Image (tube, rainbow, N blue to C red):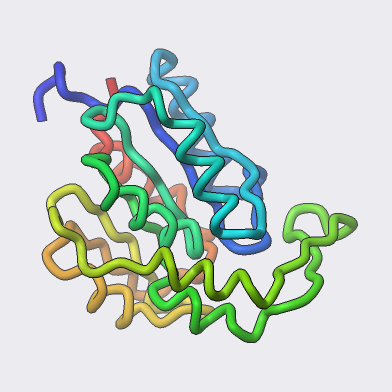
Length: 198
């Protein structure tokens, strides 16, 4: 990708019960602001409803140049990022993405505490599982637009399902790490190179 085609807009989608306050989101926001201050960065707090979450995102990026935008998604955010990337020509960085979101969250109906603010209560309604099914899509139609960071030490999701879901993409497989990729600082440079920021 030439400098003229470099990424100018970056969207970050957090995971289930997470928030813009996640360590990876804050790390990316700080790096982009410091090194690429001209790049537009947006990490919205996503509603628990998948349909509402994607409506919010689509409205928020409706004026963004699709050929110069990228979306980063962690866990459930990776599932969302895949759907969004397949609707456009955006690049996608997937961090331990949820592959079978409807299956995995089918048992999570009810009230939950937010990860970064336990006083905040989040309600995942049973009907949201159907909304996740509606967002499911096939394999990446343009694998070269995807970068997958998958940790074998993920205690929540199976890295083998991630690798099988995204054939042909640029892959970084971590031998250990964890679901939150607590060693993300060791990998952020690779993510930044893939994004090719303006």
